[in-house]
Length: 132
Image (cartoon, rainbow, N blue to C red):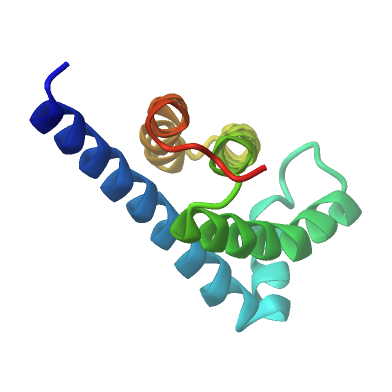
């Protein structure tokens, strides 16, 4: 691979990593600013699913912090492979929850994001030495 193509690929993966990082960061910040409201909303959203309320409540308090940490690490480029793995697992959990709600529009959105995570992880790992 020539040097120009290599640099173009590195830039593309940097932009993808930053986009995913900003997405997670802003989700985390927005939810953390109103944790109680987010918790109440989540409990309402899952009230007709098989999930017990205590599990929904625990998740609603954890998700914003996880999103915030993932966002910060991706933006800074720290622990990239592991961070993308945790991000992909979070998206899997969100897809599962959306499926329980039969919220197919949200599931589609999560699936689009989850398709990018493994690609970004593999390429960032290949082109940028992650900090472990």
